[in-house]
Image (tube, rainbow, N blue to C red; front, side, top):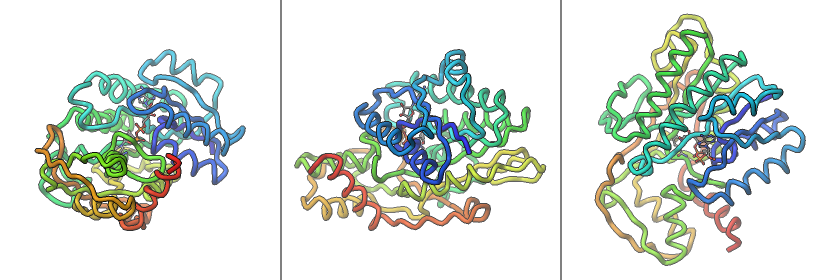
Length: 332
Ligand SMILES: NC(=O)c1ccc[n+]([C@@H]2O[C@H](COP(=O)([O-])OP(=O)(O)OC[C@H]3O[C@@H](n4cnc5c(N)ncnc54)[C@H](O)[C@@H]3O)[C@@H](O)[C@H]2O)c1
């Protein structure tokens, strides 16, 4: 299979490309390699993909929010399926940099739908986010829940992506699957995310900012479990059979949560990090941040039912694996 993976220099896109190359697929990785976080890490991921993939890996450095240049950059390249993982991520950054979300998540998503439509791909899988659930108080969060009250611009753009996708599944019968990821972590992760910031600060003897005075819960999902869910969605396009799908569509469009189905107290993660790094954390308790939610918890029944998805990595196993990689990457 030939797969176009956007966001291939990013955490999840890179991890997916590794898995696809390992099973013998060809990958076209597309990414603008922006400097939202350390570009060296993105370049290191790309170097590894070139090494693993040889001539089955092609890299296209392109901003997908620019339609004409995007079309030109893909001319002459063949692909059967798309996994669209490139986006401007992060809840807090969307408060200060709203336009990055307009370009990458709204214009960018529409452009990738247009590519999928005009290239007649067999399947397109795209990233949504658990943040679409906003301040939902019904737990766990299920794809049947209404999600019409986003509390950050990031969440609003992800919900808009789901709506645009529904329209393309209706108008052009393009098979689409939207994945709402829950707090992803693991090797080759993201330096702007809590797990990495805590690890870095604990190791350096610096305070860690703990929001809502520690009264926070997250459904932490290990990267390998996320990739298992993405692969299952990629291999099984939503059928155009008029039946109601996960998320409520009768078009070829499904929505799934991919989480660990386990809402963990933030301070438990801090404890595991302390054990693995061998230092006590200095805690700087802070109030709740604008746009943030107190708890996330994934109902994974839909993807378990349709694809047999079953996460296998608890934080007791996954956090030590992340720290092992983190030390190796930093040579400590
Ligand atoms: N990591 C998580 O916990 C998490 C949770 C929920 C949803 N998601 C979503 O999953 C997807 C992948 O996230 P990630 O953690 O790998 O993020 P990431 O930031 O590591 O990767 C995203 C990549 O997209 C690229 N990109 C951004 N805008 C672009 C543009 N206009 N053109 C081309 N490339 C562009 C960036 O350069 C980056 O390498 C994103 O859609 C994100 O919103 C992630």
